Amino acid sequence: MLDALDKKALAHLMHSGRATWAELGQLLGLSAPAAAERVRKLEERRIIKHYAAIADPESLGLGLLAFVSVTLGSHRQRQGFLRAIAKIPPITECHHIAGDADYLLKIRCSGTKELDHILAVVLKEKLQVASTSTTIVLSTAKESAALSLNS
Image (cartoon, rainbow, N blue to C red; front, side):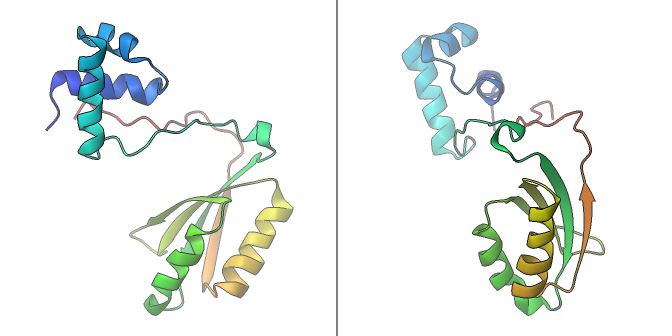
């Protein structure tokens, strides 16, 4: 379970991952070493999994965002599909889902030509998925890696 200080530290780090120990300590009312120790314990418990810089996709030429529902032909394909998906950089997320499809993929790529290649060649030809359904994002009102700690 997380106490109030853990939640406060985690919330701050999710929005400002480069916060110094001194800054975090001041926010929590702790010394910098005490704040660092608290974060180290969150890391040990795998509550904090890793740290990353969040890049602007448009600045990197990755202006197309699509969500693709994937249905496999057979559940025996699952392990091979998951191993292959893990090695495809434009596929940034893969979720096993309930409903008509088996998986929901989040794909960030340069444009429709690259997306078409991923759908037609990578998913359908190479991985032999039975079907896909694609939604292309026109604009994004909210996108965050931070999780709600209110529950």
